[in-house]
Image (tube, rainbow, N blue to C red; front, top):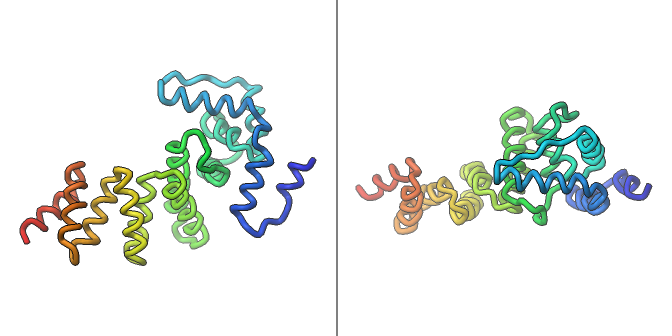
Length: 219
């Protein structure tokens, strides 16, 4: 079968390979897409639908075929998934793109997957790189403020210019720790900019931002 053969091709580019997977399986499992979209709606109105065994079996098959909707249904509805939640979230994040209907939810999934990998496998550099990839995607593709803040904190001791960019994006997304991070970076060399961002963070009740603003006012 052509779509299956495509998935077995050796890929030089991970992003290109994932694009092929998304294209080859788009629309193959419309019932799983329907169920996933139903979950999106029910998660906001509190009327979560139940899933029957036939649909669950279908979506398990869909997930094995790298269908993002099938994996999403398995993550939220399968009491006995073959993959643990971290692995499922990682798979969903890999398959996701900015056209996914609920970008806020995808941002959370990518961030949670990356954070889970970082916390559970912090001694292995390869796993840390994978965690960083997921969290970067949550920030850059899905505008998840927590992920941008996390990347800013990660880069702060490595490259302050890169950290500043992540903090700027986080702050623009109403991430109060991002505003605090900017204020902290500007504190020693640009008091005006520092005050601007610390006031933003303090106004949103970020305690460290308020403390640093008090220190700035005493100078």
